[in-house]
Length: 532
Image (cartoon, rainbow, N blue to C red; front, side):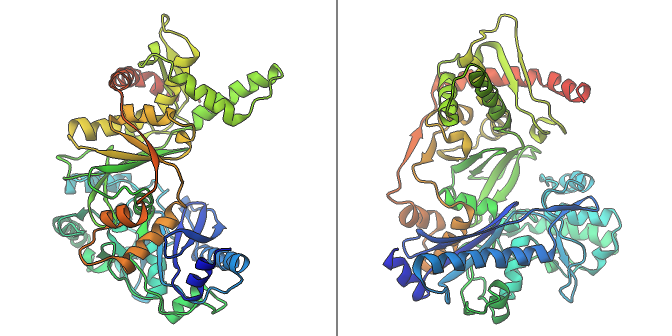
């Protein structure tokens, strides 16, 4: 037991971050060194009701209270004290979605999460009007689709927010959002760190044409930057969070953020020309840009950092699932011959074999599409492997092709960003299962992005920890101290990691592979149509 941590808790100086993920709500308590000292979790799951992916309000509050109860229990078990007072508090959640409320504060329709894909018509029309890519999961897409569908509740909307914004509102009374989270509701003008005024006016014209009396800016949350005060925990809010009424009210609260913003914070990727790549079951990259893009690209979502800098996000549905399936097949082969192989050893051996391959995979092409891939225009997927008759059919080339495939859709999206838009990237931080085997995933990702990729030696506690760090920034920042400077000097100073620079031959090889990959997409589409 750390006496320093115990004293911080007893003195009310510990800071709490809570993040609502898709399947788990996680709480991380940090001390004055920003190190995690206690944790709480609560598992939950969305449900499909009337063809809508949703969580009920009862799910939300049971989840929050269950997570906090788990955290308080961890504090008692580790330090023998009760959690009575906090130094600061912040909430984050899965971005986007749709939670409209009337003047009485009642939810008008069940919470529509980011997972719903019923807004295609609205997205196409808004993207055309705004000349800005509006993805299906964004809040404004859900609102406009409800308008187009003639849903009667739209007339009664007095407040529209996200999951994180809802929690914050009920605990503090403040209808606010961090700018990163707000950027998943409606496009942000990074020059003013607020909703884009021209687009607000364009949407108001659409609303007025539909006979609606409200103005969009009047129903959206107020936008705040990281570091700004966002209210305090009220007496009512303290009881909602901790029904035992042990926790005291009055805790300073930072702006609620989205999981993208907390991920950027947790990987020290909020400075211009930096980014992070998360590679697991799905894969996405976020690059902080120096400028807006020159035109609309449906493959790229534009959001912001928690301090308002523009971020280009490429999100792909498929990454390691097909790789895992092939490794599983090799495990079956080994078992058939009576060879008992450790899975970590098997992954490492096969991944390292890929580094011996031809950089263009010698005529092999793999598609890892367990599900559809919007970046390449597929609504469904069929995992597929093809090769030319004269391909160099080696294990090394086979494994490299499958590893390339895990990154291919991400590379296609980022090639638009880096080659067509000429966006510069100085450094990227990689995290997730693809990087578990040292060197291999990093080296090939550096080739895909043509930029250095760093993997930290110590993994953080993820988004909930990132949220706690944002709450600490609000409390600790000095006059004029930016979020990037704060993270670099106070949070990540002294932390070590491994950085791999791109090799020219790998970059050229991956580029050649991608040309074959794109030219063979017709076969993948045919497989989707023909293999039912």
